[in-house]
Length: 357
Image (cartoon, rainbow, N blue to C red; front, side, top):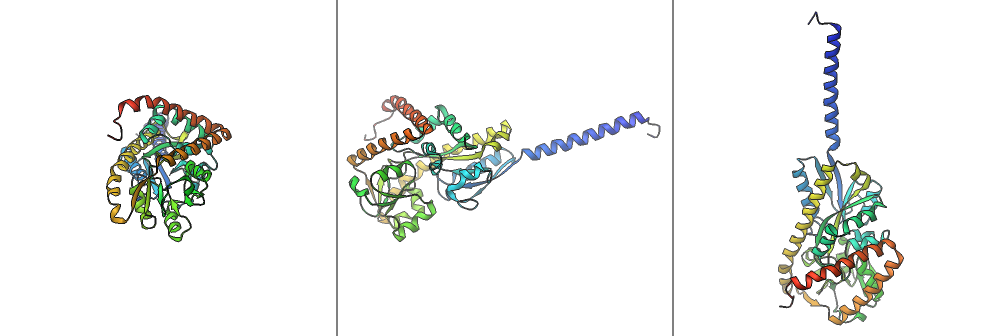
């Protein structure tokens, strides 16, 4: 080695240095590709099918990515207010969140259509529209204007029509009623004369208990039971005309989403698609047992009469028409949903057993 020429020494040194630089670059790139996101949920993760899908998604994506993608899930309000998740994503206060887009309707009117629609699609029908119809593209185009990328991450079945302290027999019973009602259904009840408020899930029970509200909707019976509504309001009405499906989304800052590699985006999409299906199955599995236990809790399951449903449908049609006139995006997305439902009925009316067999 003493006799090694200067040229050979220089070449060897350059090779070693190049190897070290390459190794450092690969190491840095690997570190940069690891995802460590704070993900705030809008629903408590103890709520089955509604709140817990994001935990399943977090667990599955960590395992599937070998730990390269990890979400630290935060409960409602831990970082930003429950209804402020999307705005926080837009401003990069959070990289991602798990939310119900209906809470954005004040700033993004068409967002409500992506979360729940009165007299709208059944859950699997909505999923079909999202994945195989125009839904996903329309949603991505809508939220791109707000620097947010939405990924469908949960769909569950209809909510109940609400928990009421007093019986509801006609449209007049809504006049002056103080009720917590979210989304487009809330606008319908406002037109019916109700005093509608929208408060986060965790504030509903105290409001019922103190008499600040007379009634409330929130979700499916298994979820509502965990919220304790049955202790105050003993009349649980069906069907959930105002929310025939409930869709929740993982929302990601669009700049952050675009910066991800194709494989990372694919893993997130795959995990949320699995989360969507598992939320649906879990939601459907739990409700029958809960309803069977109503009598022991002094709760009466009641059905809204057909005439009342017809009146609510007529008001809904008026509200939807008015909303479509005010907002171009709303009109476009609502038209797409209605067209899909019309086509889907050709299959639905022939393929499935009648529900009164």
